[in-house]
Image (cartoon, rainbow, N blue to C red; front, side, top):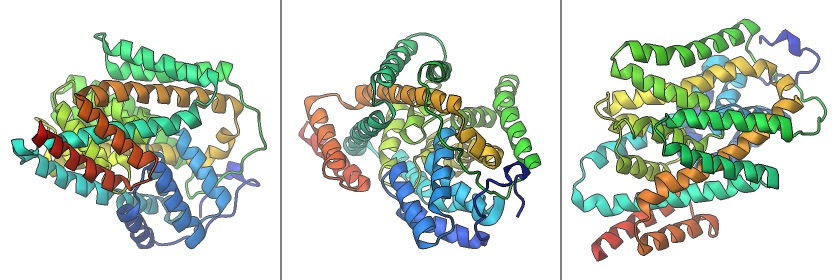
Length: 414
């Protein structure tokens, strides 16, 4: 196994290598059964990879979680990819991603084809899916706020991020640019005003990636991030515009999960690629399937017009939004120990995470609430869905089903 030479003397023991097929089978089983969002996914991973199969120890698993919560992109998917890399090299990382991602992506593409063939009678339960999206985002916001903005300084950053996001949306400036500037500013504020105590050095994770491979991954990452927007401007190929939009979202969304919603919305709804009601209905349906929420990108690619659409569009958007995660993991894993124990970086991340809470609050109002909560019965239905999720811990797929039925019932009564 090739390891980073600079990590000598500090590495945890390398896990026993396994086969790509082994990784694919285990990841597929998780992809079919992991309901409940990123936090629940990490619990499933710990039970399967650490406790049951002992592919890695608790310390290494905690180190990987810390890495993936720091990088942009879907944290739970990145943890799974990292474990696949540790187990079976870079092909193992690809197998871990395919197994965990494809079940929900396929389900959402099927849903997209069904939705496009529905008539007016389906508007009620589609509205129910929009209502449940409000409850899901509200629950995610509540949990994130308690963890990422628990004190006055970080709560203030969150509130200011919300205000600036809403104000920015009323201007003629690009929404995605505003979100990036908010995140960058919050990182700077955190670096200067939210210092953290330095702890003992974190152990490096021994991975089968050399320095030259890691460097090449970063070169490709930035070449695509900077080059795709230029290529988009000088060509009129629709697929290039799609890849640019979804690659940029995958590169810049901190917090993963539900935080991807505002960036995706800004990329696909204002240009007219996806209708607002299609976006929210698909987001609601995404809560009913297992696996990562980032597979919502496959649904958007499937319903996108006049872009590729269908299975081809779904594959294009799904790959484009995940490529940054692969490149950043390959580039960062060998040197993560040193970065993780760097107090200035940790302070900046505290500010960024607080701003993520603010962005999500703005999303709750701008994209979910104003489109779904149109009457007192809608509010009651959303409140009931929130209570089922937060108080009674009802499985998300069942809450989605009940809320869709409730939406259909309200439409008939109305």
